[in-house]
Length: 297
Image 1 (cartoon, helix red, strand yellow):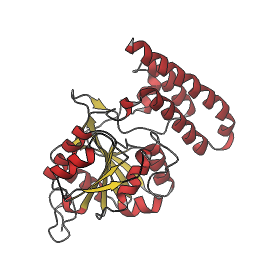
Image 2 (cartoon, rainbow, N blue to C red; image 1 turned 180 degrees about the vertical axis):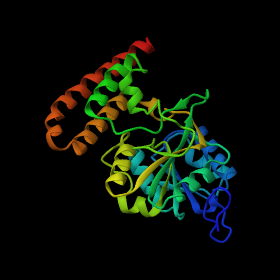
Image 3 (tube, rainbow, N blue to C red; image 1 turned 135 degrees about the vertical axis):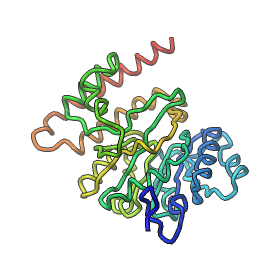
Image 4 (cartoon, one colour; image 1 turned 120 degrees about the vertical axis):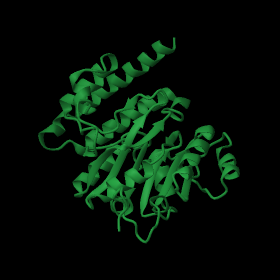
């Protein structure tokens, strides 16, 4: 049986009871409590918080506010992928909602994500529409960029965000009224089918932060799965609640992760471009740090 949203009923079980939420937390106490609350309002009964060594009282606060939350102490700051992998190991649902602690799930989002995922057995990952606190839409669905698009977006994007390379990479001119395939979706919040997650081995932990979502989706496509974007599911993402604690380190980490992804995915003659890509990323990281410093000044 299916309900009107297309979600497999499986004996009348609410989608939220089939979904396990895995929240990766690092010193985001206030946002974490809001995130857990929004998941409970969506009927998610299995909530796991993977805490990466927070020192702001996050664990005590969430345990006091909701004693049913499972807390996994990772033993240190393992990064987003490492935290998500540890949390998923104790989750019991057959659908895993992986998200940042500074995400708030809006009404109906879990049901819409589950319906989109189960509409096609080939789908491994589905990402929601992501908005910031002001209501601006974050470009979650994206393409795997060509070298030209990556360089164009990387440099022109710092000063001219609407350039054609960035628009193509971020799929800004694509229709977003209905669920559609995307090369990858943001790891800040997505629903993944457990068999796919386990077959892929979860996130690759060699990415401390950033690009682990691109890598996961890349491997999903390579393994015969698909990735989709579901705009009917809406979440609000504060963005940067943890990364702003060490912004310059995160800029460097971001570019290092991009280099790792490029090294693993450039094939054939394009492998000859790796030195150019590496130099470009070093220069861009320096420019991004300078731009941030100037903005702070």
